[in-house]
Image 1 (cartoon, rainbow, N blue to C red):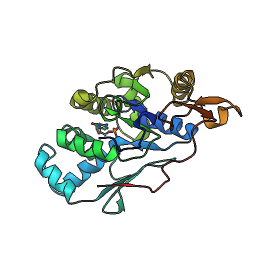
Image 2: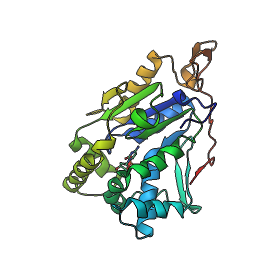
Image 3: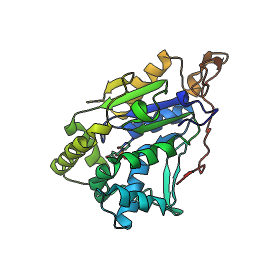
Image 4: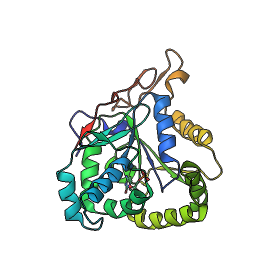
Length: 258
Ligand code: DC
């Protein structure tokens, strides 16, 4: 469902497997374009935490949906970061634990949980950059700019070990298991631009993305010359206008409620 008057084409999607760098890239690109960044994984993680706290089995869809209906989960997209709250309490850090990692794929596999997350994401007013697994293929198929980031499981494990102190082999094993479990909902959109990030650092991947966007007339705010007439991702009709994306169409704290 797309809300009337909302241009869901003005969404930039970043999909790909775990630890492919999607959220860092999406966040950086969003900031450069002056638009909010949205992390869809945070909603799946919050649903997993709610299920765990309610004693629901991650494989029991009905029990998870019952738990979701009795908790207010709020996602707050922002220019710099996303916050997720359960009943008003900030759980943004609590949803990034090994326990949530181990269970989130089971929770995210349930079709009605996916519907719940997708509906909440479609309430966020464009433009924004969003990362996930099925953003380009399923949730925002009409998005005009779609990227699918990949890297080998080993490289992704190396990156994740840098984020959390853990053993490389154990992390590589956990990522490979998650790849398998997430495979069904991680199909790239047919019109996604694939970027192999193997051996590239964050700046280099962002550069590749910006190059693709520039070829389509989307340029960072500071790079736009005065009077330069480019497509603005906030405009649904693709019409030319001066400059580039405006700053902060979803102010920090403008949350999406469960
Ligand atoms: O991007 P992430 O690691 O925070 O995502 C956590 C989990 O949520 C991941 O294992 C798969 C699931 N997920 C999903 O199925 N679909 C999405 N759009 C985003 C995340």
